Length: 322
Image 1 (cartoon, rainbow, N blue to C red):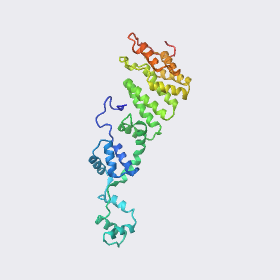
Image 2: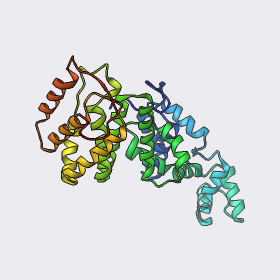
Image 3: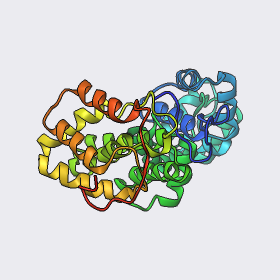
Image 4: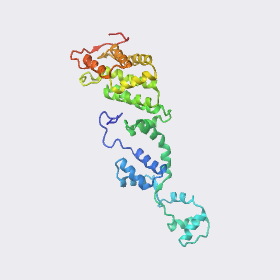
């Protein structure tokens, strides 16, 4: 999928919308903190990945105190505290300086003579940032990064972070499905339901997967939001055909058919291109492994390519309305 879905924008999001400071800051910190990368190497890699200049990224990290050097006496003092007094005396001795006196005086000599040279290093702020952001980054990366914008997910996460982790990506995708319904956007509805079915496939939750595969099947076979654009329409996608075959094996034919009735009725179609009965017959053909091309050719001939097609306005309540 080349374009990502947005809750804020109908078509194209503004330039740079995909880039998030939270993401590239986290990515940088992760490389240094958890992957033992050097500061310079991490800056090069992250700048390249997010199409940023290295100078910009370095300045941003310094300005926001994600990385520090020995010019920051408070942070340097924390680093010096990790050394034993005998090690600090050794540093002084190696530079021909006095080693006598209490710990505080020894540390002062280190400061005054700038002997404790440290390159840039991660600040405690970076480590706190990593701890606070790692859950949302992981959820987004694992489930949503290919199809959605992090900035929008982050806004959603801030309002829903107390929820169970398994519910967070599902509820976020459902927001996009609801938006597609509100806008009567066929392609967005189909795509987001396919994303959801794939999500439950990865979880091996075949009951939930079935619901969303059938939503795609029902809306795509009866595409009421694109009545004026049927000539190139494909009634049954190959992945839906394959998914329904898989679900027949994982669940049963009866479960697939019975769930189809419930899903179809949930749409409360008031206009009919393909009736519930004809949709059932098509689904039954899929369950019986009828040739994929023949199924779509039959749909084209009878409905999508039929110049004499009459769009029915009716509310169906039973399987055998037609």
